[in-house]
Image 1 (cartoon, rainbow, N blue to C red):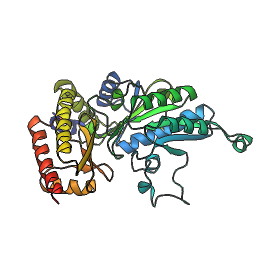
Image 2 (image 1 turned 90 degrees about the vertical axis):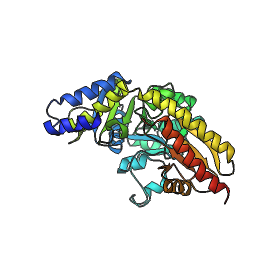
Image 3 (image 1 turned 180 degrees about the vertical axis):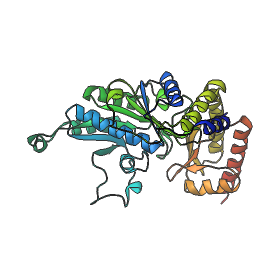
Image 4 (image 1 turned 45 degrees about the vertical axis):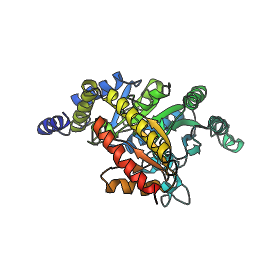
Length: 360
């Protein structure tokens, strides 16, 4: 389905200026809006670009409210991309090293502990209290946005709690700031719902998507609702290749697969199978493995006896492709079309690898 769509589009027209109406772009935007809380969509080429767009949108929205010194709150151990603003939004110092100026990255970001309600409340209060010296200069500091992953990937496969996200929603509503959900990894069915934030019972003002959206073809999307959907005017933000016919044709093929192939049902079924299997292996080898966490087919298991990367490397030698999520968590993110037999095979390889670690 995907290959056919790409080949057909490539033979017709793969790129045209966004000054023109692009039917494939309009159709994909329509599908995204109909299947989310969003009212408008901006297309780009990657997750980092979609997050950059969200950051720009939040700053412009804050400026429209009279805020001269906007601050975006993100979480420690988050990951939002590798462009300069997105990497600053990323709450991990190892990604900042060597990219600052005078010890500073992009100004206007601060970090809180993920799922810590008290710290988030205090941080919002602190930022919205403009210091006297700034006020004397006619400046106003304030929270532009709270930007969070519904489930932290690089941070160790750590799901957000409903209570934490409900408080974030409440704080944004009270201060007029935006709640942004980074759905680049958790979105497009990965967590068992089309969007990760649906697991948390909240509605963001802005959310971002990429990765699975194009089934491997580069595409990103910035989605917004309400006031946030009307922040950008003509010329405020743009992308030469964003929303091109080829990428959007791929996105439409992915959308068709979600509608016709019951991908969410498979994600939940195989996710439950994988989680149950990992929990059984962990219980059998408690000296090697720890807690299993995650939603759908975005799962992690703690490695307690060795670095996660070491365990991942041993599994790769046996034909099982995994990836670490931080220093102590092994990440399982199989394709949404993974079969029951393939999950069983993965669990078998993983257990055999873990059993060898238990003997050393």
